[in-house]
Image (tube, rainbow, N blue to C red):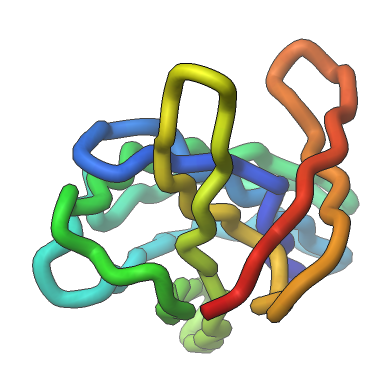
Length: 139
């Protein structure tokens, strides 16, 4: 079973979907329970969800995550736990809070599936399938 984050941008003080792809290569149909653990003060809904995966199937799971307005520009961990066929697997993903500046707007974003980058250019996949480049500045 493979779990992969889909690049998702989350804004401080808002509830937005974090998206994960779950793939199985098992030779049998699996009943799967996925749970998500978020940093203290963050919220996720649903915190747990159940679904069925057929052989070779990939299921895209969307979980609404609320990042508090007071979150620091830092790296955080999200823990994803999968339970299926008497097996339990856990995987942690880094989420990094970065600041993006525009001419009239300053917002802070969380990028799921990106590793912390002190400085540099990052490619972001947008919901409409387009990509955008942005500069990431560390602290």
